[in-house]
Length: 99
Image (tube, rainbow, N blue to C red; front, side, top):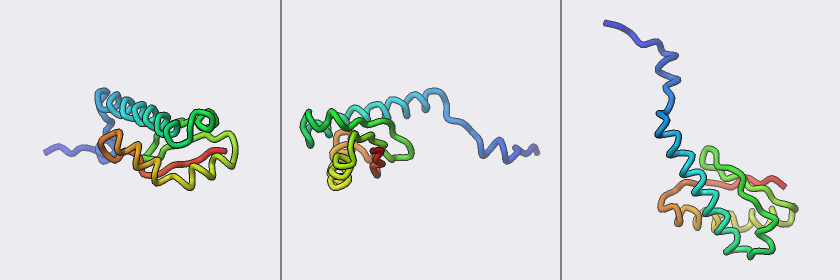
């Protein structure tokens, strides 16, 4: 009977197909986030808001001003719900703001 070293078991990587699928879903989340921000805030304010990346179900957004970041914080639940609705599943749990 042979044993597999625990290090090999813990560090099993996703297949290239799984990695590509995750990247595609992250790109779709960013696209839906952009569209949702335009819908909720209008094109003028959306110009100052930029979705950057999705990591561990947290969407990171760059805001030009702290005022815009506060507006996003106030409407975070609505933004997250709309993105998840467009994705058809729960991909985003929270939003992180960079001002």
